[in-house]
Image 1 (cartoon, rainbow, N blue to C red):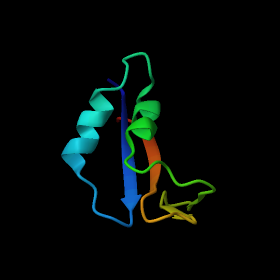
Image 2 (image 1 turned 90 degrees about the vertical axis):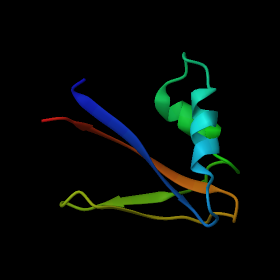
Image 3 (image 1 turned 180 degrees about the horizontal axis):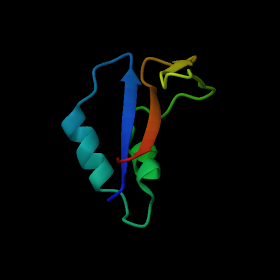
Image 4 (image 1 turned 60 degrees about the horizontal axis):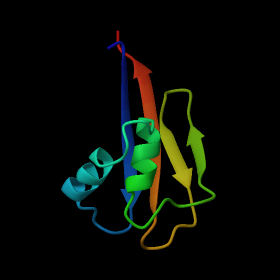
Amino acid sequence: GTRDIFAILVSKKELDWNAFQKAVNRQPSSLPWPGKVKTALPGGAAKNVNFITTPKGNIGFTAQATDHEVVYCIVEFDKQ
């Protein structure tokens, strides 16, 4: 393909990456990939996340998340 897409997950607690990947893979094929990621998050997604980007392409955020919520960001870019 000509595009790559990946998720960045940030959690206050350690995440079981294998369990998360299995949960993503169990989602219906009709659900777009970002929706699969959100649905598979252990503890749910943090709300009211403020993302910040810089001209150099850096990504930052601020959030009021509980110990079990995860902040996530979907990143897509064109391959060259």
